[in-house]
Image (cartoon, rainbow, N blue to C red):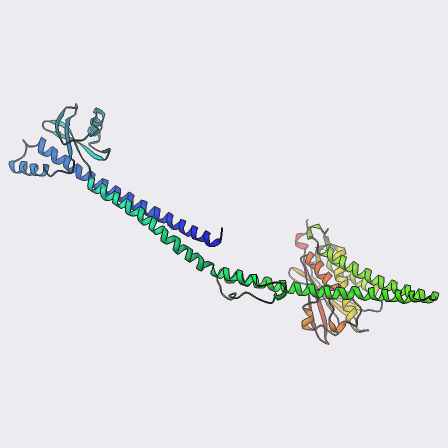
Length: 461
């Protein structure tokens, strides 16, 4: 069922419920007022009959005449009965069954006044003491005129309800159509967006209503999708280039070697060159495997409590083993009084890879002899490592892609590398609820900041 239809039915159902309740209230209170008003009129007639028939010998002639006149002002289909308490009927006027029984007479005598219905006839019984004895006077009538008006009111309410529902359904359909128009517009615009034109955005995303928020959220999703597609294209392009280069070199070397017989030294040179290219392919494959491992579910990675400064020094030692001529200076911005604030929770092997990659990048892009610097900073809830090189820097355009696997900036193509280090470090840090940021200026160098949440507050005692 379409939302427009649902809105129309819900709108009509709510209105129908309100209208039904409103009609029932009107009918109920109108009926109640009619009934009570007619009971009061019948009660007056009972006392008029009692005064005329039982007190005629106790009042003046003038009062007797007045009672007579009042007595003959009858109600429609009026019936009057006067009984003694022993059930003897003294007076009867008019036709109609009043449901008189000894029990009913006794009940009237006890309650003094009693109202009840006998079919459509309303009956009032009163206990009337007199000098001639004690009597029960019953007066009844049928409010035919008011009952016809009540029936007419019921007809009006039913017809009005049905007519109103027709109007409400039509108006509700129009209201739902108008309400759904912005969403219909969003759907129409979304259907026009495909993988080839992810730059398109939804209109009406600058308002404050729910549809504008939806459009704004969808535009943000398109921003992320566009960036993801761009990163994917960059990854495929760069990965293809990085993988194709050693393969092409290997194939070329082998084809040349097989063109004619060669000497032992030439075969050794070809094998050595092929071995280097094969190692390069192995490094690329290992990098891809590590990225895949760093993208796995965090709950499946074994984590322990580690000293962040010790982790950094371990990574520094490994980097210096690989690059003996390099220089890496690590210092504390401010050593904390509580050393537990240096504790982080994570997988030592993965975090070591992340820090090592950042340090090796700084060594790689720093000019010979200048080296890299690192600074450990302890904040309120995080511990940071800031690593700075003195290289050529990265342009603002290339900074957008530094976390794309195999991406390499144009101005560092001449430096050996695969573009795997920073993407791998980012995946590992995300796995540990951390973050990595890169700031760079051309010809001034690049600063990479690693952030990890402190874990000392959560260490079990």
